Image 1 (cartoon, rainbow, N blue to C red):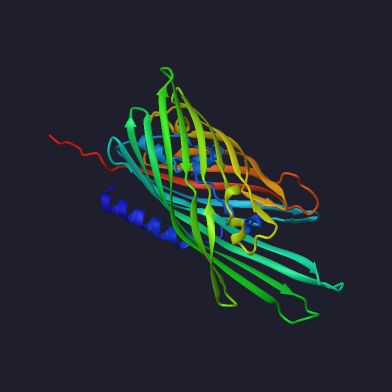
Image 2 (cartoon, rainbow, N blue to C red):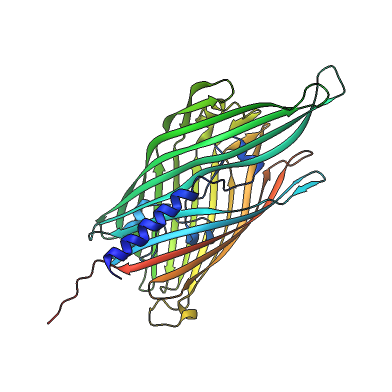
Amino acid sequence: MKLQYQIIILFFALSTCSGVLGQTTTSSPYSMYGIGDLRQSGFSQNRAMGGSGIALSTNSSLNPINPASLSGIDSLFFLLESGMEGRLSTFKDGSQTQHPGRLNFSYLAFGFRGTKWWGTSMGITPYSTVGNNIITKKTIEGTTDFLTIIQHGEGGFNQFYWANSFRLLKGLSVGINFSYLFGTIKQTEESSNSRYFSGSLTQETNTDLRNMMLNYGIQYSVNISKDIKGTIGGIYGNKYNFTLNQQDVLRDESVDKNLTFPTFWGVGIALNLYQRLTLTSDYKCSYWSKSNSSSAYSYAKNTLFTDSKDFSVGLEYSASPSIYSNLIQRSRIRLGAYYSTPYIMIGGDKLRDAGITAGLGLPVSPKLRINLSYQYGQKGTINSGTGVITEKYQAMTFGITFSDIWFFKPKYD
C-alpha cells in the first residue's frame, strides 16, 4: 500500500474517532460517583486475557498498559489498531430489574519502532465514563407526600496518549507515557411533586477537566530455556493535583475545585512457551484513599474514595506462529479472569468487580487481524444487603489490527 493511502486511512480513522469519543459508554448507576467508571487501559487482546498486560510484549500488536512494551514491535511494521465495545447490563434492586445496553467507540492507536532502541505509539481512549439515570422518592418533611428525584449523568474524561519505549540493554526496556486528559461530566437533578408545584426543579452541574500527567514502565525479558521465555514488568504513576471547573448552569456560577489523581503501581509476569502459549498475571494498586477528591463533587453524597486493587490472569494460545500456516493454525485463543476493588466506597461499604474473559485473534489477511473479546462480570458492594444495586454485565469488544511494512527499502539489481 502506498504511503499516501496509509495516511488517508489514518486521518479518516482519527476523524471518525473524534466524532464518537464524547458519547456515553456506560449505563451504570455506580458511574454517578467520583469521576465515573474507570475504563480498562488495554485493547482487545488485553481485555480477552483478563485485562492483563504489564509484562506482555508482542511484535505484531500494541499494548498500552505498559509503555516499555513498544520495544517489542517488529522494526518493519507500522501498526494501527481500533476497536468498538458493546455492553449489556442487568441491574437488580430488590424486585426491580433493568437491562440497558450501549455500543460505543473503545480505542484508536498507532505505533511503530523507529530505531533498534526506540518504539513509539499514539492513541486516544476513554479514561472514565458516566452514564446513569436514577429515580428515587424522598418524603417531604412534615407530610406524607413524596418528592420524585431523577438523577441523570453523562459524559466522562478521555485521554490522548503518546508512549515511548527505550531499549537500554538486551532484554531490558523502559518506557514513559504522556497523557492529556480532557472531557466534561454533566450531572442533572430534577425534583418534582405535582401537588406542591408545577413542572420540576432542576439543578445542572458541568465538570470540566483539561490537564496532563506522566507514567512510567519497565520490562525485562530472559530466555529461561531454549523454548521458554520469561518477562517481568512494572508500571508506576505519580500523584497529580488537577483543577476541576464546576459550573452551575442555572445560577451561572463557576467554581474551581481540586482533584487528585493518586500514585499507582503495578507488577506483572509473563511466560512464553514454545512460541505458542503465553501466560500472564498482573497486580495493580492505586492509592485513592489518600486523595481528597471525593469532596470535589457535589453529587457524590455518602461517598468516599478508597484504594483500588486489581488482580488479573490470562493466557493466549496459537497452534503455529508461522505466517505460512493456515488460518486456523494462526488464530489465537485467549482466556482470562479478573478481580478488583474499585476506588468508590458507598455508605462505608467497598465495591467489588469480578469476571471472566475470552477472545479470538483472527488473521483475515497478511495485513489485517480481527480481535474479538468477551467479558462476563458482576459488580456490587462486598456486603450486599437490602437496597443495594447489583450489576451483571456482558461486554464484547470488536477490534481491528492493521499492520503493514513501511520501513523496508527493497533493493534492485
